[in-house]
Amino acid sequence: MWSRMPFLTRVLIPLFLGTIMTAPSAYADEGSPAITVGTQEVGLTAGYMLPHRLTADHTTKQKGPAFMPSWMMTLTDPVGDGWYRGQVSIGAEVVYIQFNEPVLTHGIGFTPKIKYSFVALDQVRPYVEFAGGPFWTDLGGKIPEESSRFNFVLTAGFGLSWFITPQTSLNVGYRFHHISNAGTRYPNLGLNASLPFGGFSFYF
Image (cartoon, rainbow, N blue to C red; front, side):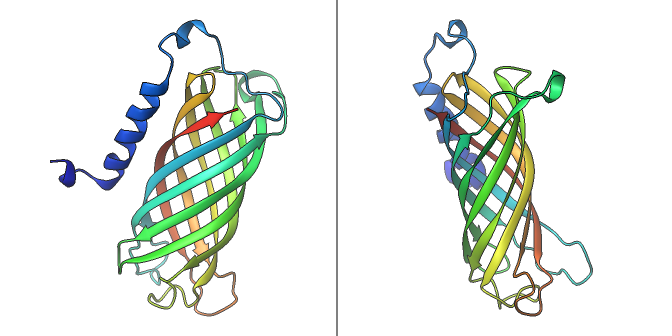
């Protein structure tokens, strides 16, 4: 039965259970997360890539699991008032994607990253994020949209962090992914995809 479950489910269930088991049961009495300037965040996120064919020339249905370990640091105390009050963080992320279709291939990249977290709801914190950087994949040259193995990946998305302890959060969200070689070789139609994800972060 376990082997027949979707790949993402098999990844996220152990992550969720492991995080819950390490959380102090008395958290409800401990107060809010204290994220201040200089707070560091180490996270692990996993998701599943689903293709977007934006034009008739986009024919490849690339899909597969993705893993994104990351590190970030908080740059500001909460700024602004009302619902948009929040904090800015910057950091970096490693992106690994296994393309299961149209052929089994792989991709890995490194992306600087910026995130804005809304703090008005205290333990539940929505956020928006942007990242981009170099990306290498052996899918290039095997599909009509991409001729190069060296590419760039750009991502934009939003998510929700639920702090189950002052130092631990569970995260879910969505990203839009774009992969292309920035016109260094042709063809260069690029690949576009949605990436729903889940994971957890530790703060120290």
